[in-house]
Structures are given as C-alpha cells and as structure tokens.
Image (cartoon, rainbow, N blue to C red; front, side, top):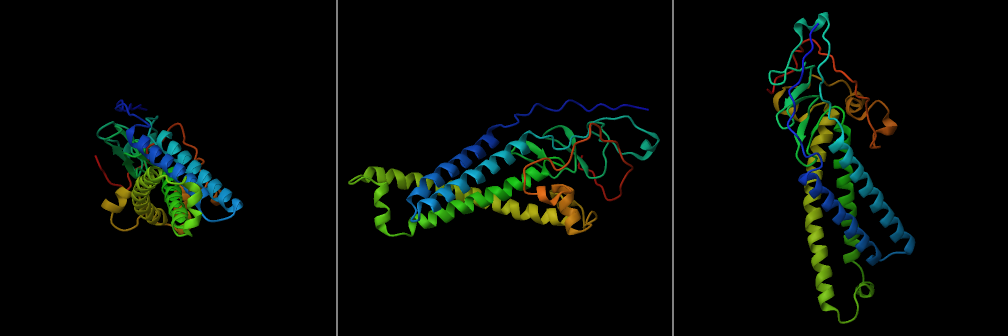
Length: 269
C-alpha cells in the first residue's frame, strides 16, 4: 500500500473582490427594488408582497453565493490504495488519484471531482459538491433581476399623479438624484441579468445532458448521459423536493478512492 500527498494549494481569497462585487450588486438590487415598490401603483398588500418577494429572492441568492464560494468543490484527497490501484490514474501535477471526470485546477492547485470550471465570481472551483449552489445562484439571480424590471415597469408606466408623493414639491435636484440612482441601478442589474441569464441557460443545458463545461468543450458526444432525471439528480441530489433548496446535495466522503482508468475520461493537465 502507498499513500500519496497532494502538493499544498496556493492560498485563495475565498470571498474576495469578485464575490464582494457580486454582493454589492445584489445589495443594489435589494435597495432598488425596495425603493421602487412603494412608488408603484397598487394596494398596500401588493407592495408588501413585492417587498417580501424581493427580500426572499436576495436572501436565496446570498445563501447560494456563500455556499458556492465557501463549500468544498470536491477536492480529491490522497487515500490508501488497494489491489485495484494497478490501473489507477494519478495527477501529473499533484500526484493525487484521479477518478473519472476528475481534473486538476491550475488556479486552486488541486484536483476536483467532476470539475466543471473555475469561477472567478465565487473565487472557487465549481465541482461535484458545490455545483448545485452555483446553478441555484444563477437561477435565483436571474429571477431577482427579472423581478426588478417587473417593478420598474409598474413604476414607470403609471399615472404621473402617482409619482408626486415620492418627490417633494419643487425638488428638481432630488428628482435628478433619484433618476440617476435608478439609472445606475438599472444598468448594473441589466448587466447582471445578461450575465446570469446567459450562464444559467448554458448551465441548465449541461445539467440536463449530464455534461460539465470542460466536457462540453473537449469530450465528443454524451458519454455520461443516462436519463433526464438521472442527469439532474447527479448534480442536484436524489431528492427532487430539495432541488431548489440551497442545502447539500451529497455528503462528501473523507477520502476519494482512485478508480480504474476510464476511456471516456480525459486529461487537462
């Protein structure tokens, strides 16, 4: 029996500047929607419902962001090797065992099980144990942005008399400031919607096809496709009732044993 040690990974910022920028934009989303909701034409109950929906959406986005950034993506740990280790594959950079669909991340300096890609926005890899959080982050982020534009539509397209209570009489500077703030928030949220929406569409397609981003780029065909439910369950967990809840999809084992070489696997270095 032999024991292999992974080289020490380079230190990471964890929730660094990219994640902080994402949190700031989400904060703008929350403040902008809370600012818009009271100015929309509707009953007090409708306004309260929209504000509650905004808080819930932003809370879900923040929870998914933190879980995706701080969770272990699926680091392959060195373990004791059994007789089946004769055909096992090992990483040429960190000497760790490489089960199928495991690849080395040059940013983190470690091998990640079912590596999808390294995301700078969460300053972490997206792998087997945090892929669910990443997909939910994109879905809830897109939904929150769409809700903002839904309220913006109700705020703009309403009788002018409904806008007067928000602005004191003869307050042109305040009106300009309000319009400027809403304009900046709208531009930021429009960019966030474009970013999250495009990534969300691609991620959902890969989810249904049981592909990772790396496999979609380098592996021809669909070697891991089983069924739509089976493909989704491999990322979101076996319990369909928890697919939309930012809770762990799987329990990470303390050791990942190396498996025999799989012809469908590939090397990324």
